[in-house]
Length: 356
Image (tube, rainbow, N blue to C red):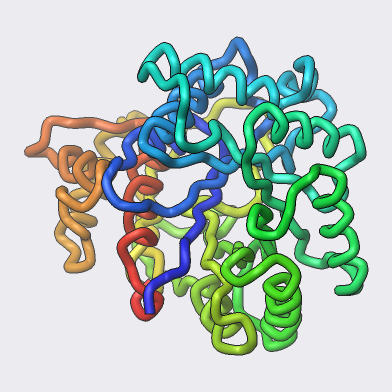
């Protein structure tokens, strides 16, 4: 059985935006949800990269889902007149017209992701966005959303306030970080997914989870199971066979906290293979060049039988070029994440449920 439509949630960072800009236009790639962060500012480097990736997606007939869950009151995006969604919608529209001559796209420039606890002002802004150009909305549900009947009533209230209707509303059931699958978690998720399907229609709900650890503690190459796949399969087989699969790509579900102090990164890569993630890491000693240590890492990866090959994705091609014979170097976290994210999105796009 193939996936209904997989979803990959990525953070709005340079590496992830580089990966999105590399997506191929043919076929129907996985949906992509971009979690906006306070670091996305009008004067920074990330915002133009995000706008370019979204404009390119619109040109290719795709739409990015944009999520304001992690934005705080201090976010420069939230301070914009009309809020983050209106500001970004206009920026993407302007870029799409300038770059691609896209004045009448077949799809909207962004799909807003609405929190369950969104304020009336938030919902009013979403309604104005829909009135400007008709589009679907996404409602993101926390791990513990309270009693099921209250959850459904709140979703119905959001639909009425924003003027959306069944068939144009998606929900994300966010399980967050999953270390191991628990039976009570599976049961609760299956009951919620089944109720959402009754309310919104089949294939309207995505179960989102991730298992990439927040910290890397060893320099030995290891393989980790991907319990998010197991959880999704158990929920799907339990009561909600048309729930979509979703994961957090190659990063931890929660954005890391930064103390503002720059660090020399130890090269690492999270490489997705069927049912598992291969974690590779190298230690940077004093006087070492991180690019050289990453090249060591790549030499190991491309010799593995589960390396997908340079033709698989932009990221795999870049990884192959980072071998010593490829004359390409990569010494930054954003570059490593870009390559791994590109491969991951291609992986979940191509795979069936049996070998995800």
